[in-house]
Length: 133
Length: 249
Image 1 (spheres, each protein chain N blue to C red):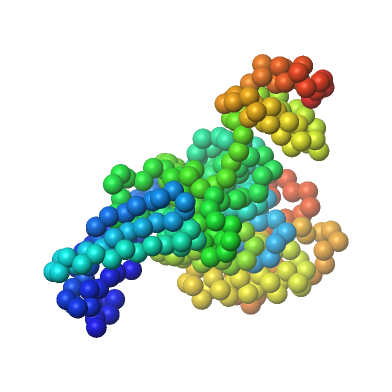
Image 2: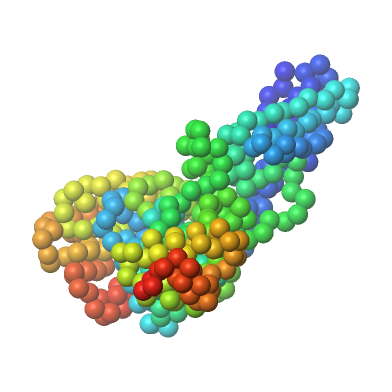
């Protein structure tokens, strides 16, 4: 999108971008001739649409990181699982594995534990009475 | 009053340049890939991912370096088929040394693909978000030199169209069907769309042959589009089935 100062017949230049934190975006554009400033305000849906294209109004200040959009926008939850813990979880019968994983994840989340290890699983089993899981 | 295209001053946002940089990134990343093959169907449940994963293994057993990009973002199955651990680094190294990238590596076990953002009218931006995820899979994975990159597409045509837009050139297409007339009719539409987009049709894999599924979809489509049936995959294929398919490609 571009902005035209109709009175001056001049293309307005991007001046500033603000992200208030409520999902909206404000970007100001200034006429290089008369100095008039207009603000473009987008609602959360419109802001998300721009974000989903992987572009930034006002230009990028730093190069994009690998999987930047996926890592920033895909919903994940819960703590990380160590390789050993993953291996141990894989031995749980598949029809209850999701439920068991959620129990451990909720346990870690409630206690601020960033990574689930076999030791954490043992502690959780003892505290929650999950013998056999 | 001047119109959009008459305003030609450079602007700081440079949105067109940012889009251009994204495409350049994809092109540079895929420069070391000799061949890209999209495995598609147009019909769900015909075994595209199964064929893709085992074809990849067939290539790998023949000494080819091969990668699989799981473009089924909402139903990723490639990690399971290639026995890749959840949260594995990208590209993950699967069975037989097949490299892969999948949304399954980013999601919690069993969790559906969901994006952060306003829930109201999410249909407006969700498609663009999925296309961006596909672009990142194409542009951000350090595949290295590959003989072949297989793209496992979900049912329908949307991901194929996004793929064509991101790649700039339509990829060659390997089509998977099951024998039934219903599958033939659905796959025909997808093949026509691929032809209209300019994709080369490599041939047809008829899957789930020899069981209860009756029909001649593979032969019908091969005749109609002038392409070979590259494999007829039985319900219990052996590694030779996939080795021969890889050799035929």
